Length: 326
Image (tube, rainbow, N blue to C red; front, side, top):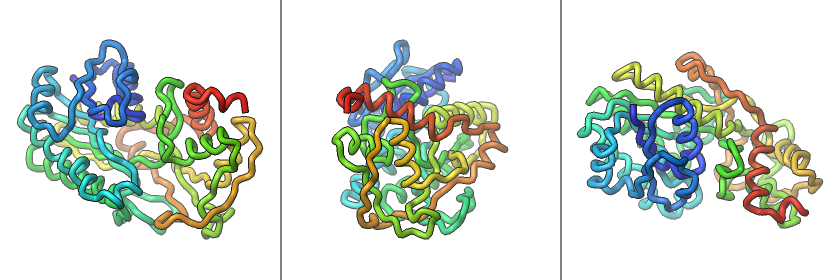
């Protein structure tokens, strides 16, 4: 099969492209490069620059490259920004998906893997989040991901398109320094940034009902995440009309304070964090149950938090050489 990977020049997308090609799959990248980096696309993999809102361009790339499957990662993903710009997020994430699915079905594509998010769950009051946990998103970003799942699932039912919606938890790490996350929106790069500035890392609230008072999250290495995409893609290839909705996590929670301690140890720093007020909407604990994806696809995470921090730090130092000298 030939897989069109939208957003394939982004942080997660570039890892998916690498995993797919290393697994022997043919890939084509479609990315508007608003946040993606062209140099992340491997040699020999075609890169087409365009938006999923551009129906004519989408149709052309599907035809020109004889695409038979799609992995759709292209999306806007900043939760805070989505609160300020909901119409923009619905246009990019939902309308862009609708246009893409319309062209996919017209072109006779047989399989579609959708990048969803644990943000669809909102603030679940459970120890482990399963795929049956009620979805109550708390931001327009989370709403667009849930609406996207509905749209993907409905299209599959109506057309026979095989579909998978993959709900990511907290993604971190890098396969190599050149594929590191260049954004500073998640905990690990946010701590790196403070350490580079010789400033204390921040904890947003230490009065949660958790063992050390800080929020607990489930972290997944981006390499494991990419391999989950390969497993899902191959499962759909061999099962026309199949529909999957799967969590991607490790089933292990790590608190914010514990994560900062581990980052200090890996980076050779010793900067105690400072505590600031809670951020609105942060749930105390969000940890995945990954039992279903193991049962359905035989996939299981192979990297631990130490791997995530170490590989992320190597990428950070490559982008910020001064960090290694502090």
